[in-house]
Image 1 (cartoon, rainbow, N blue to C red):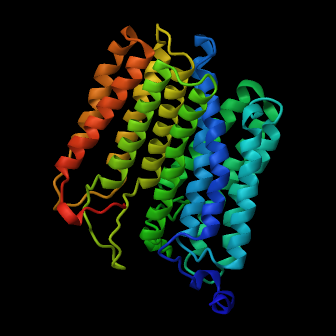
Image 2 (cartoon, rainbow, N blue to C red):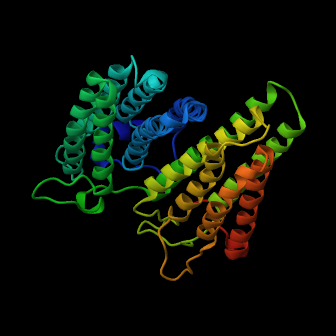
Image 3 (cartoon, rainbow, N blue to C red):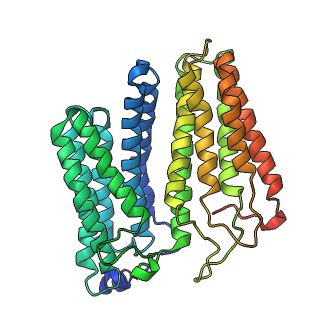
Length: 398
C-alpha cells in the first residue's frame, strides 16, 4: 500500500473516508492553543472596561487566525491522501509552526509580534507553495495558485503589522485576516477568472473525512469546558457554589454534545460518492462559531467557580449566555439544508431565548446565572431531540 502511495503523484491521490492518526496528533497542538485562547478571554474579563473591546478584538483576531490554519489543513487532508510521506511532512511542519504561534500568543501584540507574523506567513504561504509544485499538470494546480496569490498579499500585511507595532499592528493584521476570510469565502478568485466552486477547479473534497475532522475538533473544544471548570474547582476544593457550577458545566457539556451530534437538519442526503454527509458551503465558518461559543462558555463557568460572590458583571453574563448563542447559530448552519426535510427552528428560537433572558441575569448571583444557562441549554437539547426524533435512523454524526 505504501509503495503505491509513493509511486503516484499527489494529484492522483484521494483522501480516505476516515481521519488518520497523524491528524489527531496535529490536534494535540490545538489543545494547548485553545487553552491559551481561553486564558486570553479570561484576562479580557478582568481588565478595565474602556480597553475591553480592543483586548477582546485581539483575542478574536488570534482565534480566527489559528482557525484559518486548522481549517485549511483539514481541507488539505480531506482532498489528498494524508498518508503520503510528503504530505505528512507538510502536516508536521504546520504542526510545529502552530505550536510556535501558540507559545507567542500572550506577547503577540508585544515583543513577539514579528515572530508570530513570520511564523503565520510561513505556514500560510508554504502550504499552497508546496501544492503548486506537487500538483503541476493536475487540475488542482490552478486552485493552489489562487490560494498562494491571496496569501502572498495578506502576508505582506502580516509582516508589516509585525514590524510596525502599536495601533498599526492591529490595523494591518485585521486587514490581512479579512483578506484571507474573503478569499476563503469566495474560493480565492483572481482577475479575469472569478470565483468558482471547488469541484469546478478540480478539487474533490471527501465530505466524510472533513465531517469526521470537524467532529474531532469539536470534541477537543468541548474538553475545554471540563478543563476550565475542573481546574477552577480543584484549587479551592468543593464548595456549595463551586459544586453547583461544576454540575451546571457538566450539563452544558452533555447538552452541547447532544445538540451537535443529534441535531439532524439535512437528514441522510447522499453525496455523489454515496457518503451520507453533506456539509454546507459555510461549514468552516459554522464550526468557527461553534468552537468560539464553547470557549466563551468554558471561560464563563470557570470565572463563576473562581468568584461566585455577587454581584455579577455584565461582561461575564455576556460570555456565559453569548457562548451558547454562538454555538446554536453555528450548529444550525453546519449542514446543507435539504429541500425535503422540514426546517427546524428550535436552535434559532433557543438562541433568541438566551439573548432575551440575558439582560435580567445581572440581577442574579453568578452561580444562579450559570445554573440557569445550563437549564436553558438542556431544555433546548430536549426540544431539539423531540423535533428531530427519527427512531433508529438517527445519525450520531454529521
